[in-house]
Every structure is written in structure tokens, then in C-alpha cells.
Length: 220
Image 1 (cartoon, helix red, strand yellow):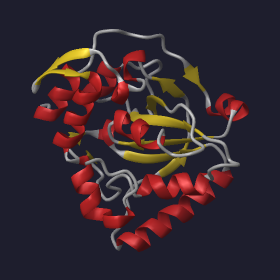
Image 2: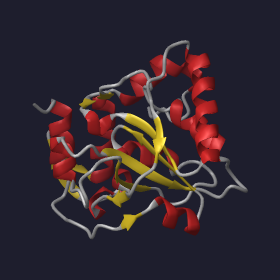
Image 3: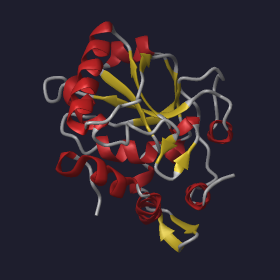
Image 4: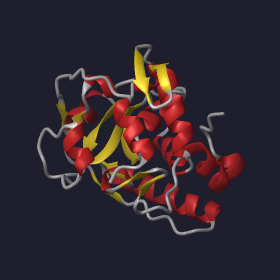
């Protein structure tokens, strides 16, 4: 059964669809340095990391599962094994992979194994997907540091990356769209609908409760 805000999130979507692009970790790594993480709703993670200097256009997508070319509806129903995830391209001369990992762990609830905030289910779990041993070592060190700072067990796994499937076009940069859409809160611009969802889902309130002044992306 979907929660009120899961329904809100779904009703906030347009019906447009986009072509699916398959990016293997090897191809993506050859093009540019990148990090792949899952932190609950990919709209929110995309919004957070596109504000970081040195980070390029973050891609929302699906990874970690067994179903090829998954759709949002398939992933949302569960059973695909996929996470809502993002691919974060970055310029290593401006921002390091370690800094991205430090920001990531402090921008989610890494103690929650059942989803994130109001979004429940395997597709909303947190995870770090690594493409090299160096990334695995750095992510592990960042996880240890975050756990020490938090004083609680972090359940976010660090796993080998598989195929990353780009999500439908209407999910990309959802947080800054300007289309007028109907939501449970009435007609809103897409960016306003995103803000309404994010606040209603309790993301920032929970992160601030957990991380306090160490939380990097609190929206007010």
C-alpha cells in the first residue's frame, strides 16, 4: 500500500516518457569520473548534488537489480531488485570522490534499512555502488568516519556497480521544472510540487535530527 506522499509523488509526475539509455560502469568511467549512490527519492539526491561545485549534470536512474530496461512503474511496484539511484559526474580537480562520499552519508538516513523517510520499500534503500577498488576503499573509509560521527550503526551497503539505467526524461531535473501540474495540494509548478513533496516526506527534518550542523543540504 502506498503512503499519502508516495501517492503525491506519483500524481506529481507528467505522463511524458523518454528513451532509456543504458550506461555500464566501464563506459561511464571512460567518459568522466563519476559516483553512483542511492539515497531514497532520486529527485532529492539529484537536487542535492547538483548544488556541489565541481559536480556536473546528475542523472537519475535505476541500478542494482536483475530486470533489464526497468521502468519507473516496475521499480515502484517492487520485485526488480533495483534502487532509485543517481550517477554523479564530477571534476576531480574541483571535488574529490571522498568529499562526495562524506556529503552523501550525511544527506541520508544511513541507519534505515527499509527505505528513506516516507518512501518505504527496497527501491528506496541507501547504497554506494563502486566501480573500482579505489572507490571501494574510499567509500568504506567515509562510511567508518560517518558512523563514528553519528554514533550509530550505518547499514548502507557498499557494493560493486552493475548496469545503470537512465530513468525516464520526466524524472531528470524534476526539482527545477516549471510545468504546471495538479497535486494533492492543488495546482503547482513542478518545482513547487517537488518542494511540497520533499517537505511532506520529512526528509530534511529527519536529516537535521540525525546530523545537525553536519547536514549539508537542508532545505527550509
